[in-house]
Length: 345
Image 1 (cartoon, rainbow, N blue to C red):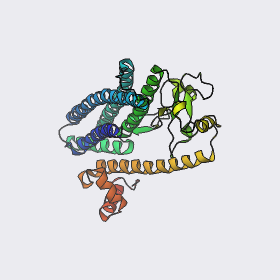
Image 2 (tube, rainbow, N blue to C red):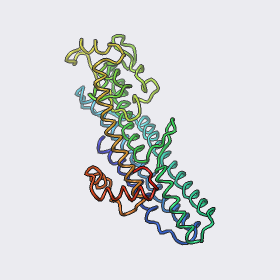
Image 3 (tube, one colour):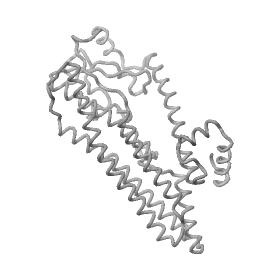
Image 4 (cartoon, rainbow, N blue to C red):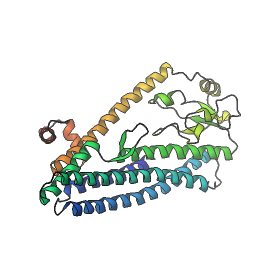
């Protein structure tokens, strides 16, 4: 899944950067209406291409992951006969995945077009000469996107999520949902009722008390907690939460190396233990590193919008410059702050 996730993230990162590059490089000439229409057309072309890629990725990835998960279950039981794939389940999962990506694409298109219109209206209201008006329209647009970013979705708390970050969320969540769904369905087809949740040294507070346990798929094996008591699984998502990396794995009592230990561990308290606290602490440190990465990426995009080609075209080059606190980075930081009248760096 790592390669599949990277493929989608790269597609969305490239699209987001293409939109930024068009806004940076588009010459502000003619009148505002012509300038706006030209931007609309170019950005729409990017989003149409992006949508086609999202559709293809959704269908290819879901089928690949579902097939691989069924094969993994078969291998666990040393089953060599061909298993017919559940095409109905694959179609539903693929459609749901594409719908999420398409919603982000539409959201971006509407937001950017709104920002382009607002930038033009603001410039016209300033009653400048024709040439100055279109140049001011571009500057207004740049300023707006620096402030707001190119976001792919607004979450339930109203927070704006960048297009590439949202694609990463969909990719990781799809991996978990498809893998877990296929595993549970194949186990059920084989009349096997037990699965074990994977365990990770870094885990969030939500997952910490649910990982490492054996669960009963049907809920009829009273020795183990029912799978539908796990968040997400109770509502049919087969995923504890967005971006969750936990997976359910086949479990058979006769093949277990320490069944009594697994039985005891599965029925432990659902309160957070000292071990859980260590795993959560490791997770939070990992998340802090990830947040810094995203902050640096957002800074690079702001600098690109404000300063154009004075800023490296690749994030990796910009980040090396920032980490090294080079003279060039300090110059860029100073230029950006001056341009933004002392705003954040």
